[in-house]
Image 1 (tube, helix red, strand yellow):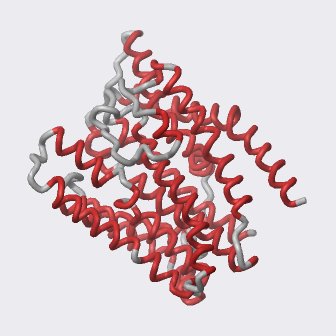
Image 2 (cartoon, rainbow, N blue to C red; image 1 turned 180 degrees about the vertical axis):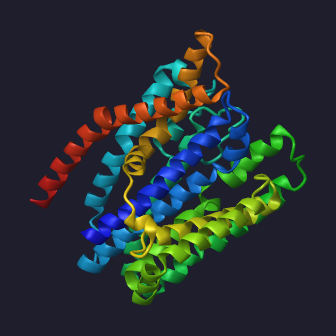
Image 3 (tube, rainbow, N blue to C red; image 1 turned 120 degrees about the horizontal axis):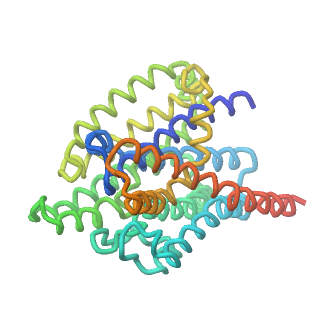
Length: 372
């Protein structure tokens, strides 16, 4: 139990960093202080960090279950995922579709795309950009649906010993697809035009098949931590080294991704970012790392609220800034930014106590009934 708690502390630090990165990146779409443009421009990588974390945590859980029980209880897995993801998401959808004042922009994609978790395919963010950040949740949900089924299938057809190879192939698969998409749709389009960005988001940034780097890296690390004692021992002995190596590589990644819509960033940048965050995740779970040893109440709480904040932050920032405008209060300064930031935390707390906790109790009742 002690080791698990220490690991969670390290991952909490990274999860809190991820949500702050996302907040700063999206805050640029609202009235903001000038410094947000420089600091927040790499905030899009917070989603990549979430992907790596999800890949690692979910895969680790499934690999342990396979190791202990030789199978996966799909019913229990999907019940847990359903009650963790769907209730807060469903409430957010209601807010967006029933209360127009919650919308940060005008046009929403069709409701069926949100319900089916396919919004990230063919998403025209220029014309239908409201609640566009749900694209990453679509990828997560597709991942939750397919990973346990894929692992069971691989085990059934006796290819489990080759699983590491199959996982690692996801990374060049996405890279090659991004290269193809760039040459097929973007190579002759003016990079300063709205059409370029519409196509870039639609063909390269949002589709699941072009964004498998982070999830693949996370799953691969989870696999090695479960099945390779040499790798696990190496990680536990060199936690702080991994932390500094991850930071250096992340700096290189940011340099490559300095222009987010460039060919280098679009093709290779996502992979570099995913590998960088993967190394930081290895540091976070290492017994020797200061990340896993240091407990911080702020990051623990922020990490616990990160999902609710991610869902609701754009609508909350929009409402707060609209309210401040109506009161004649400046919205482009640091004070407004802090008000919006704490309002997002307040929204996350409302989600926790009004939605997540009640549904969590219901989840445990169902799981206990299933065990008996």
